[in-house]
Image (cartoon, rainbow, N blue to C red; front, top):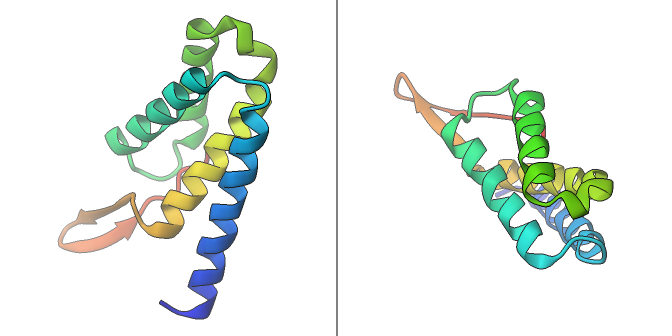
Length: 109
């Protein structure tokens, strides 16, 4: 792993830490963890690139329905989801095999 790759990975990890720290000031832990699990499930079920906006809209709608008390903090959740997807993409979690070659999806949450 080259220095630039490590730098990008570190930057993504710090971004997720900051977003999660800020979110926990306003969103209860169980709601945040449920949203993170739903975001990961959405990425695993459809790792193809270019569908991030649709996945985010579905996650947002689900979160507001499940946790209406946190509707005003949806932007805070969006920051956590973006940071999480950035970190998982940097690590290569959403790599998939297509026709025998590895590809990486780059969803935008």
